Image 1 (cartoon, rainbow, N blue to C red):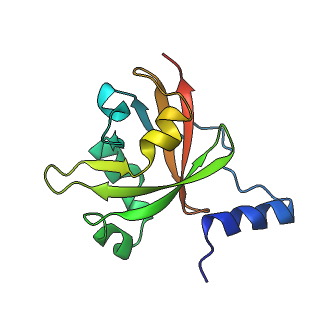
Image 2 (tube, rainbow, N blue to C red):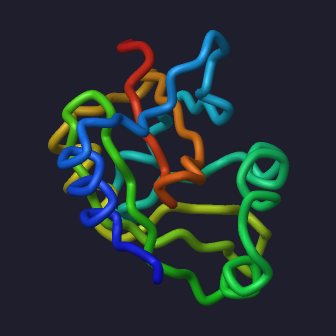
Length: 139
């Protein structure tokens, strides 16, 4: 039985065991400097193709990878604010780019007051089946 993101977090809190990634290496395998296009009305975060192919797709099963063109809902854990949000992960058919869409602008750009030049980090947390997000540097 697959647990939802919220159920995994509840179980973690109940057991008193943290499943948060803590390593001596930098877990932020996808680093992105926010650009004007990531802040606009399209409400999307454009991710580098090579980073997604190297660090995310190999961790996903065939069904998830086959759904990339249609897009599917993913959990995104904001490590700074300890809050969870739902976005859609998708591969654009036109150019093969990967994006996080949906409420990106509202729940990340506006809520976290992201600006052009800010650097963010992402990685796929396989244990909790979610992206982890953090603001690494402010412009």
